[in-house]
Image (cartoon, rainbow over all chains, first blue to last red; front, side, top):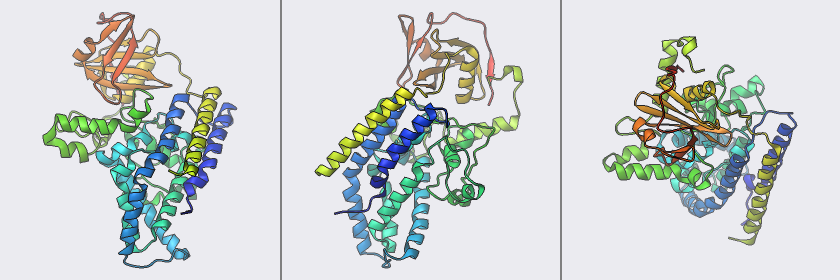
Length: 305
Length: 136
């Protein structure tokens, strides 16, 4: 079956723009940093993701088709209003998916690899999950088919969202025009999302429209006085691609085996949750940071900065 | 898997190889001078704000550092053009194996199982105590 797949169509654009970003950075025309092993991991994660996605693509599409057969309304794929409504609903669904993927460890385990690079460049955008299908987050999009949007239409809109989110993974663009920054997700907003500074943790979950973060209270602008430090709260110690793909799943399994009575907490609690409070969650890190801010600066000659 | 997908995947793999080669050729990783005490403390402060460093040992090759913070060891290790930091019990750091001028520290973490740091000796000899607060 021939289908319109925005991601496949955009792949040559992805490759060309990574080449462009590297060459322009080499010529010092724009600001970008690439480390070869880091780039390799990002790109092979992207390639692997497209292969791994096949494993669950059939099941997820079949589920969407089954749901669609029990739809509440019949929404025409050719109507412009339908695309506008789908754009908004899909983007809000993406916000929910993305927030869940950061705030609950089971889904973080499949999403963490996207944040595992200490770099932020166009190749980082392609560092995609291998286990998203298994994590079942595709279930979140089924209500759209229940409403009456054809599954192919939903798939196309998901693809458009993914393609949109590619170009915002760059340090080369500092700020877009103010009106654009107010409405859309931008490189600046998404740099915050990829930052590991406590102030920036768990912020800016948007796909295309940043307005969802503004509505739901998770928006954080990028501040000139606090540069983004990229990666994970606990960065990975190697460029082993299998470790990148599976380390959090292994961490969950290890914790569940060691502490079976607290299994639910280790699986569905926030990343960093522990039964004895010995680890740090985003919330605790942000609280510590906020307390440090409130306490005022330390004596200058004793600061590590 | 149909033939078109296999061709597409093979072409993508070739493109990835070219891009990685280009990234290596461009030499646009972060410029990183070997760690000195000040930079090691700065990096530790990023990861462990508010912690006090009692003693600090910077790797002889400037690619890592070990700090004592109370009963905890703060470990810093170079990965690519970045750094990875972990905290472990001080006793665990003391138990690190030392061979050929390098200690191998078991970090007991699936994300970063071990750190290898070049130090002159281990277990450490007391040095001047920086006693630095890693304030946020």
